[in-house]
Amino acid sequence: MKKNIFVIILLAALFSIGCSSTNKMYFQRLYSIETEVKEDIDGQIVSQKAMIYKKNGLATNKFVHFEKMSRNGDSFFIELTYNGMDWVFYDTFRIKADGETYSLEPDVTSRDVIGSNNVVEKYIYFVPEDLVSELNIAKTLTIQFDGNPIILPREAIQTIGNLIPDS
Image (cartoon, rainbow, N blue to C red):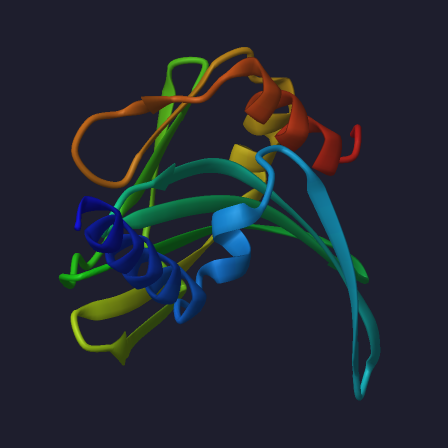
């Protein structure tokens, strides 16, 4: 009887993960840089994206990516994805680089219902040039988008630095 209940719970959890649009992010390795070339009418756009934070829970998942997009110069973005049972509305993303705090408001927001009791919110924050310069030399980084601040480990800081060309 206990085994049957365990199997049912396991299947329900796998079904939930499999049906989620955050499925790929759920299994993505932290700090690995993924490169994708996109074609549009004006030519190629090269996107390099690295997950710098993730928190996987039973009913809630949070993912933060740092992304560089290149065409005629580089643009940098922070992408926050939330998947859970309730709407959260992340209106501000705060980042502290070596003691200097920046507040970013989302430039792109997407909110979708992907099943009963399951929502996905995605926020894209443009990273201004002065913050990119700070991130390139930062020794410490702290992010906050809800609740407590999150001190990013050395590996996350190095990954961000690897995406930013030396000036």
